[in-house]
Length: 161
Image (tube, rainbow, N blue to C red; front, top):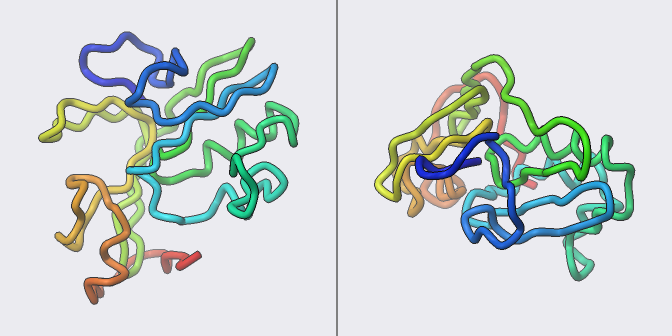
């Protein structure tokens, strides 16, 4: 993810940048977690439970899996709450642009994305956009659809995990 004033590539370039979230570093990879963008879809936990363990502290253990496997699971995060930077190798690349409508949930958007938001312009590869109207982090989903009673058709039922 980059902000309008940041340089490309669309991934974090420094662990000190607060907009990337918290950095979890291993010799071959750094994983960044932005709590404000997480809606607990849990693709990370299902993908590598030995790395993403909410009962452990810290909850992300990047040394517990090979860097390439970890990068692949991070790319599954539909919200952009997780990103990575490899110590060597290619930066995270955007996928073809897609929009997935989730039943009773957000729009999951992937691609080379730029969002003009009240907080500023955001350039990212993955976003979960609110469609219930209840998010406190608009235009991004914050999971408020679960408690707001929002119901709408979609292509995939949103995991409540």
